[in-house]
Length: 263
Image (cartoon, rainbow, N blue to C red; front, side, top):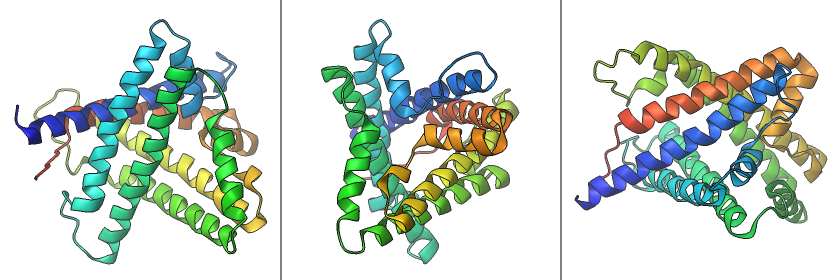
């Protein structure tokens, strides 16, 4: 196997690993919304659930390694422009987004690996708030936090648009797959639901910057709480089901996504 093919397969493994995480979040949170479970899920909780299963430590390490493949792919997209986005403002913004995505999933992979090796300890959310407090201590730190929030919100709107416009299908070739329409529908609801969650998370960052209060920053679980408290558990459940659809589409994307890595 040549180097390019090995790297491509590693990237596909990373997309599969991402799909596993989103499927767990979607399944368990939707069960909570409809009274079948007692806990909303985020990525941290999903990893802890895996940790508690037989061979959980091994599974976590495999997922962490897989996520490194996804991180690598995003870095290639950001730095080497393997998707040929160009150099206009829209392309630059997309490539910055790829870089931010790589950093987010790097933190996720590190957390999964530490959990597998050291067991449950200080939560990722506590560590995140500590970093944000440090940022707020710097002059203009609240403005930086607010800008990060705006970027996340724009990313959320972008995800919703990709779902509505079917743009997410541009580099996915099903090659006469009989379930293609079902997978496409899963992608539509998945991208829109993920966009909703990201928009809420971005709002938390923006509000935390405006109020100079790190405790107002929340992740996926906080977004679900926000949806439940403001719009009811039905909408929260529908968004959670949408994230399950997103996870399923990640399995499809890992198989059929066009990945052109040139050295």
